[in-house]
Length: 130
Image (cartoon, rainbow, N blue to C red; front, side, top):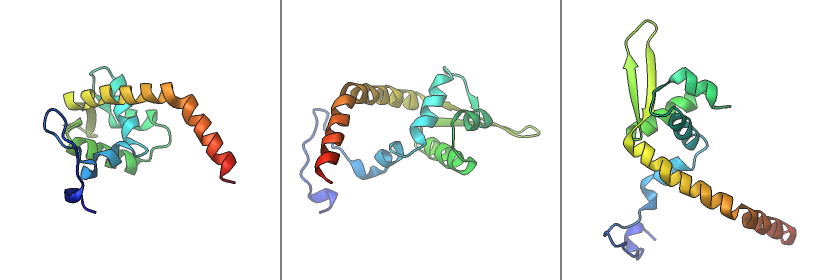
């Protein structure tokens, strides 16, 4: 069934949800939220690439570069390039990136409020599925 054949209810503003636009997948990957979170901790200041790399445990140079490029492409992060020797690159959240952080904080609160129930459900499922 394609998205066009699925009946969806419109919200009061006339928008229809469209989960296959790729954003949900990006937000659900291993690194995107961590990069956004670390940039938010900078408090409106820019962070150098090397600072992000050292603060995010386990991220490879390749994954950090790909994640930052995707966030920049989506308008959530702005990249500042300084043509020095050696070149310096810094990143910061855009206003839209900061707005996303508010939504992520709401999701985080939901997780904390429901974590005991989720863990109980997982344990029950695991007991009955073996």
